[in-house]
Image (cartoon, rainbow, N blue to C red):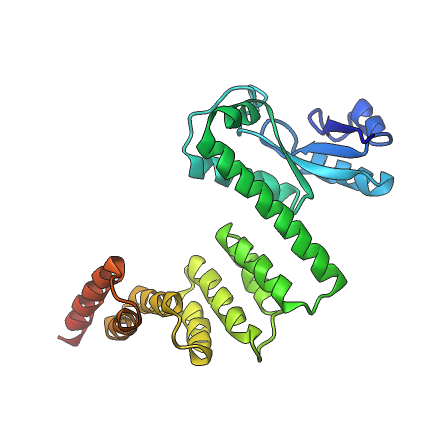
Length: 260
């Protein structure tokens, strides 16, 4: 039998919680949504390491006044952003537990349940990839998969750092440049993003998503002429891209104004 317990809801120095860490197998650690904060997470994380306790992230609606026991009417993207902020206090937990009203509402809402399920799957995947990389740091496939997940979560600065650890030659070189370029674009460093994207394009010049992002980077840098070339090349590879057709028209107009 394995015992799990909600921990860290009453501050980092709570005597009962600290004593429980000596006997439980899994601690569901409050990460700031309904309770808990950076200090309590750090304190109980240290105790978990000391006593060999497995940690789960205990996530909730961002509603400390009501202890996460009321459903908040908030858009799903905003809720997921809040959950990401909570997970930032306890990165890559092996388990995720949803608290109070969030758990109950997921039983009623198929859309919420699916979104929370993906969140949990991503956390498990991140944990798995990070464990693989601890054992074998030069495992590019695992690092690439990890960076792709982090990119979808908007963790751009970490992607920029970690992409440097992918090989700069061989099959992984394309992924390294492309992932770093996407992250820099997300950080709105368009010039640096363009350097990485063009380096990726020099390795593989038939990736439509890459070419489209190159066009967007040129457009952000007010180079309509080069953006037009990129979008035209993309449409030659893949027709019926209405959004890219609009961007091509915008880039053509921008290039025309610049030439006058």
